[in-house]
Length: 243
Image 1: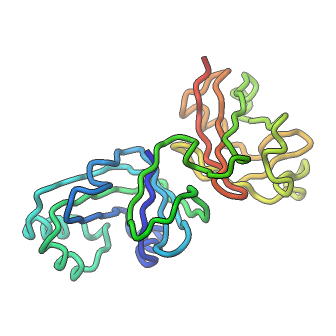
Image 2 (image 1 turned 90 degrees about the horizontal axis):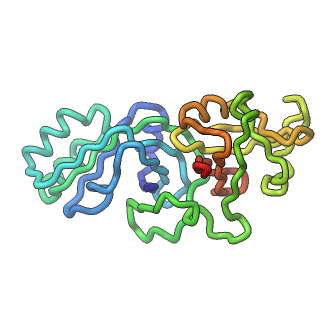
Image 3 (image 1 turned 60 degrees about the horizontal axis):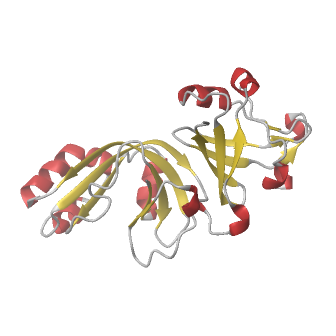
């Protein structure tokens, strides 16, 4: 599952500078993300009435219902060093909120693109199926795959042969870094955010991230790397097992 969390700018700034490492949702009813998010799932953090600012992975999740004002005070005492919430906000909501979700964040990365979604109309949380179909609503930008070869696994490369037209021409550079094109953003599943261009004469990504990512996911010859456009020069990247 993919999660889109809407936050005010001050809290996003705290997340991006590493001070806020726990996202807290305190609600009157058992609404998402309460018992709807699991460790390892990806979040996109969107500024209220603004752009996407960051992406992160849920490292640990704590959900608790049937809260009392006393219990909320205990949670604030134990965790607010990392939640960074105003005490007056907790005091007010403690009078009527009965459900809390705490999400420990890891692998926080700044982004300026994210899933294309309908207007949230005031919603502070949205859930999307972890499926390529949600990620782009333009039919000419559907997901596509690149097969992994034995050479890719050995040398940590990934070729774009036959798929150069799927990537912006401006992001296709020359052989040397001095001749690099504009950067593509690759958001690797359970991995880093990578900035790279494509070495056009060799038809491969300039980044050397693939070897460690292949090893982490036990990729094998015949598996496929799936690319899903989520912006003009940004792609969500995942792995599909071959038969």
